[in-house]
Image (cartoon, rainbow, N blue to C red; front, side):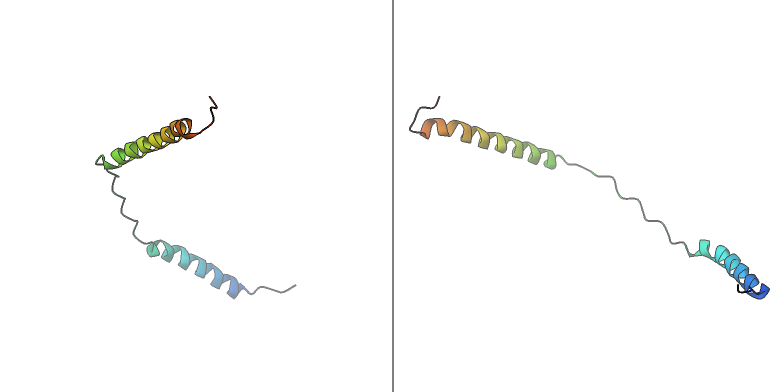
Length: 74
């Protein structure tokens, strides 16, 4: 088993103390907080428009085959 010299233990303790003193000084600035999200209503209007377009598309594909199909299914 290897013998640890007291000098190397003292050096390790001094290095640990030095790092514990210096490491808080190295911390960087914190980031600025992000601005609060704002909505001017255009995104809500666009969402309503997309929903209405999907409803119109579904109604078109549900109603149109009843008129165009040559065989009476319903």
